[in-house]
Amino acid sequence: MQPKPTALKMLDVFSVLALAVATYLALVFAPTELVMGDVQRVFYFHIGTAWVGLLGFIIAAGSGIVYLVTKDMKWDRFEVAAVEVSIMFFLITIVLGSIWARPAWNTWWTWDPRLTTAAVTELIYIAYFMLRQGMDDPEKRARFGAVYTLLGGVSAPITFMVIRLFRSIHPVVIGAANANQEKMSMTGDMRVAFFFALFAFTVIFIDLIWHRIRLGSLEEKVEQLKLKVSM
Amino acid sequence: MFLETTPDTSGYMVAGYAIAFAVMGIYVASMYIRNRNLRQDIEALEAMQEERSATKK
Image 1 (cartoon, rainbow over the protein chains, first blue to last red):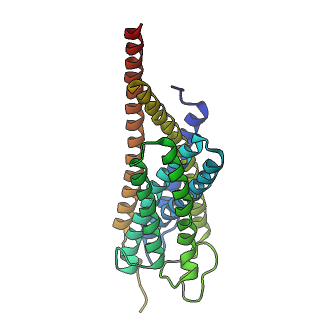
Image 2: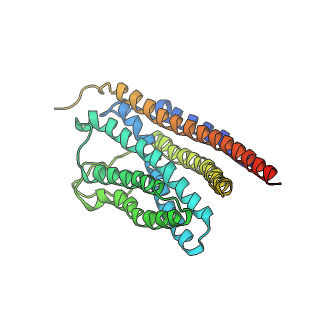
Image 3: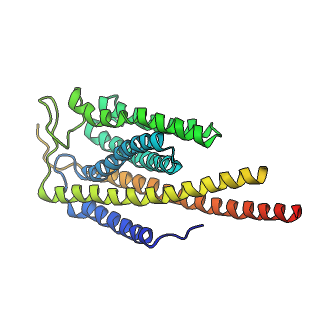
């Protein structure tokens, strides 16, 4: 059992500090939005978690491709880590979006294209773990996971692009909005909180993935030992 | 019709941040518990393996 590397210990501390600063910037430093009030502050964590959530699903697809080419199990562990951490972050994105929607749209949920694709993406990756659990052979499981994340990875860019391709009530934060859409504008202090939240969640994402990969190595060791003992 | 005052939506903000921290906290705790359990499993399985090899000799 390998001890925790110093770099990971340092990353743990840095992640906690980054989260604390991001929270301070979002809750105290950024000004109150005049039309929506304090609920607008959930936007900083909503976007931060959405960024790493979708990034993780794309990284998982990339790991799947590398696994299929190399057949090296470390890429399967990386893929599992990326999917699991992203599911957690994307769940936060969806819940925060729903909480923001209640005072802004007067409803907790609506089947808008963005909300629908986000919910479908989350369900695709929850199903990924349910299906993997049904497979005992590690190689078959890894091969299935690689193909699944490769196909499932398409849902991430669709979720990002859908508000730009279809008519949607969801505001556009990054890039230009079309004539029917609301473009979210930010003051200088809001931009500081926004970009720091993106940075902080990226750091936390890397930290959690590293921990999850180590956990995957332990899981693999237990599987191998169980096989040896049963023989 | 224009809004004269900013609406008080702080309750939603508090709920949002409470849920975000709760989800992250639960995930980190689950990772810690899984790690601890796997290490215990490894210790037990290694002990079983040693026992087996000792009885074979």
